[in-house]
Image (cartoon, rainbow over all chains, first blue to last red; front, side, top):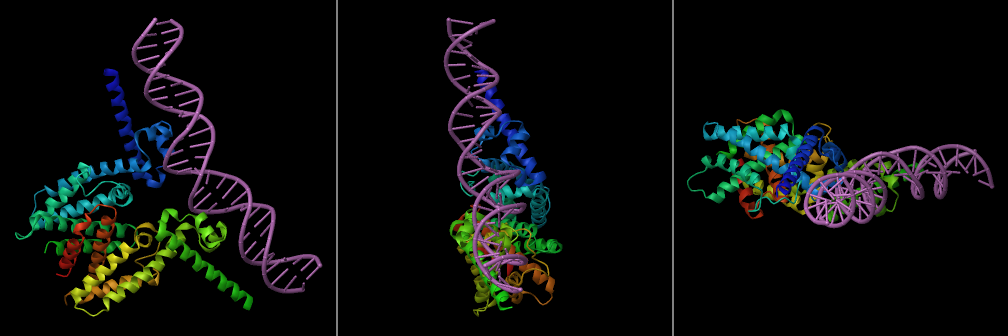
Length: 194
Length: 194
DNA sequence: CTCTTGTTCCTAGCAGCGCTAGAAAAAGGA
DNA sequence: TCCTTTTTCTAGCGCTGCTAGGAACAAGAG
């Protein structure tokens, strides 16, 4: 009994270790550097140990992505609840989102560009994901007119999100001039809040 | 002299063959299927021949991406010059853009998500890229107020582009519910055109 | 303390990847 | 026909994600 729980605890501990190592490696050297061999060396176990915890490398990336979503949700929440007017709050949350993406590009990629088979806009989506989206939604809510429905809110939130995501990704790989960034963001926020 | 030109012609021909094969393979089976071995087999030459034309696989993808930009520019131009009001034209061009991305996902990825080191928002950007962006810009131009500058136009065009790009990519990998797509697009267009 | 059983873990290897050195083949000129 | 230059291929390097099968270990029984 006690032995069993200790083992499970140690296993869970090691699983967190794997995720942490993968994340740190990705953030410091990019996802290309996160090979199963390198990761195994990092956690001081052999390769097959990774596969006893995760189905494959994609599953490890997905786990990192979920952690990233939780972090993002925290940062968005901080920006949202910092008490300013609705429009100012929108700008602050947007800045928090874009800042996150720029500060942690590898993490951001794992969350929103790399992984494909991670349940998302469904009931089975990981709580951290729903929470992050919820922060965006509650940021947008005060800007809605009375005659607009909850579905309108969701849609506008997605447009807000999509706009930021597009700007972030196109900026990062050189499609946009970086010097126009502030102007773009201001324009996006201005137009989306009527 | 004549022999020389014939050789150059044949080489150029084979280069187009490589690009076409890469594109077709990517569009039918995805970029993962486009390996240098597979591509060599497809064009009925050995692997090193590929490297006598392109520096590496990335360069082949870049060539495909440029071709894709030319195609996109053509489709955008058709939508833009189909004579409707400015707002309706904006919607048509947006639909053309999104339709292109959905119809040719592999091509779209090569153009806007995969390749990183392709000169873009600079003077050295391939003409096809500048042309495609130009189509977007000229679509947006009629919606500008008189007091707005050319830089504002560029910025708004980028916001327009970024919004569509974000929606396209987040939709494709399951971050968005597909059933809200039309509502999202309508919202984006409505807000961006005042 | 020793032996057996069951679990955990590692060594070694597979098939495939992008890419390249050096040999073989082909083509052109004398 | 021979030689030179250019083109093309064979073979292989170091790497990837992933896994089968045996070694090492820990836990309980006698």
